[in-house]
Length: 261
Length: 169
Ligand SMILES: [Zn+2]
Image 1 (spheres, each protein chain N blue to C red):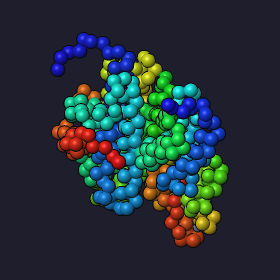
Image 2 (cartoon, rainbow over the protein chains, first blue to last red):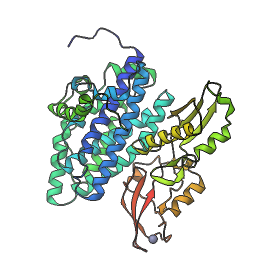
Image 3 (cartoon, rainbow over the protein chains, first blue to last red):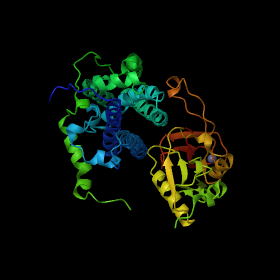
């Protein structure tokens, strides 16, 4: 990697910011969609498919807006299907395999709680279309937070096995939670422009919410100051993303002119 | 060769839009749903602004397409259907007639949305939704997610019927 000396323009930064947000939601949506037909009970199968659709819907509108900001006449699908893993900027947390239901729920809860605070901020961004989108997504994120929180409580404070699985899930994913609050020059520039959010502002609120729910669920809260993995925002991913993209992109790349009719 | 857009009146366009229904809830049209927000006509083209309901709603692209088909059918040549996010769709935009139609269709309609500043505190609370069949208040939320993005699943303990509720957002 060459060291960057070039300074970002506002337009470049905004495009990057939108794509990062969209990548998180697309990849998470894809992981959730893997539950379709495999949910532990019918209601959950339907719920996870709905949450997957919401996330993919959020991603679609963010990519569409990113393409507009970029102004190069790209379709949102070009951004989705014709980038390779180093060009994807999602958090590592969302690309991890879906695991058992407990793992999916742990991730869903931690990410939805983070999104809840982030999108409250974005809903006040100094851009009518972007803030409107964020406000809309926030309404749905609240449902996702409510849904995942209930399952954390039910399973954490459930049977010995469900409790152990919830504990293992949080212990396993914990090292990926620090990256939620990763910020770099893209964020800094956009915070100055009133388009981005300084996530350190709500870090304590997020920790408190997570701590409250985990304690109520009798899950031992892992150490917030332990070693944290990062790299996703720079395109450095786990081996899992490549496999996910291969599956997601294969059809479109094999038949680039195919259209839905 | 092109017909000028100014030969059309806004009223006419709105009437045509009322002929376009939601594929998932065929008793409602896109005007009473609050999806079609604005019609503007200038010399060059007619612009119809639509606001998406739920982000993940697969019906949205179908609705967009059906609006285009409808206008084409009516002979309009120059038009654009534009997605607008500047205002956030809410179930409060659904007309009272629309809510009554929903109920007749067997879907418990959304109530008024309430500001939920204390959302975190109210994480647990769920509202009482009357059964659309027997009006009973003895109903229970089964899942916040139903057959489509906009609906939750409930169960009525009085008439022992499952029913769907159009969530208020
Ligand atoms: Zn009833």
